[in-house]
Length: 181
Image 1 (cartoon, rainbow, N blue to C red):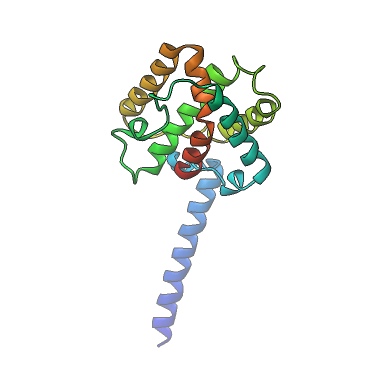
Image 2 (image 1 turned 30 degrees about the vertical axis):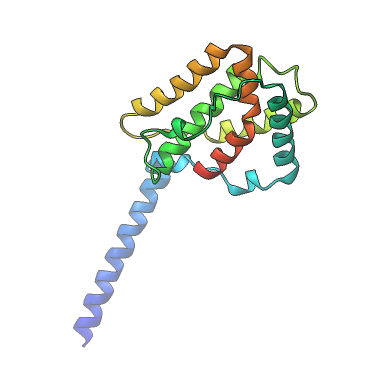
């Protein structure tokens, strides 16, 4: 009986020591062992702030009133073509790319319009973009880049009308970010 207790105690001590060594190794690497896709997450609290949610949807509504192109949808099923519904890190990475494009190529050039909503929503979206800055996917992302390029091409082809349409779909972008990330 004493021999069995000593054997169990020794085994337990080895397991504990191995766990401590693993923890120390992770601390030394400063969390470098965290999977890349874990950065493709946003806290749900970002989307539960009623004031900024309201402002985002008001901005989208105001821009959609100026949008005379009802034939084109930027954020919809086509955007997610080729991306499996269960691959949340890929969906979030796609939305990160769309968010960054929308901030740089759409909202900044149109920043003088749709006030006061624009001045409140842009910093919020910029914070989300910063939180997703470490979001990357492992492996080939050509299918995602192809979808983003199609969206960019559509906006560029439509010119200022495309920018207005993208602003008009900020509510859809907000919901897609919430659902994917």
